Image 1 (cartoon, rainbow, N blue to C red):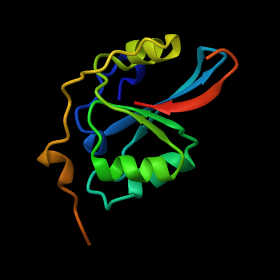
Image 2: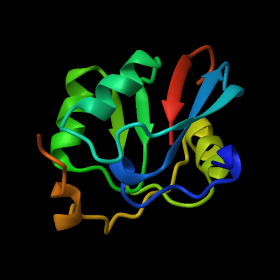
Image 3: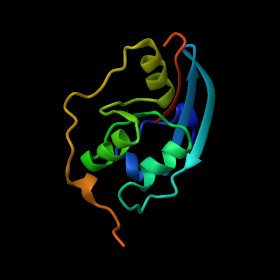
Image 4: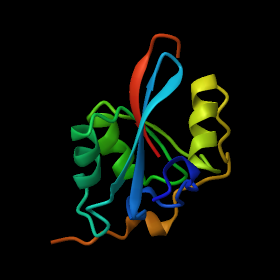
Length: 126
């Protein structure tokens, strides 16, 4: 909940807060921290929630395959393996030099769900 000073979470769907960053003309224009209302989520709830918030890029350490499919179906790009402070990750993304952990792999923890640029403008989330 510290916005740009937060560390990128390990499991995207289980973080308590999301930092939504609006980027325009290669600069951070707005930062919004929102509570994750779906920690015990059904598949597809988080992607739909974030799409409604205007998010079009997700940058995270770990995002499960099924969640990536939901994000992609909604037109949201997903970058995995990101690590460090959110602000540093945002700045490296803007510069086009984002570092990711190439060894990141989807593990079994990503399957536990409770069942039942220049002139570019984007809204990203970490």
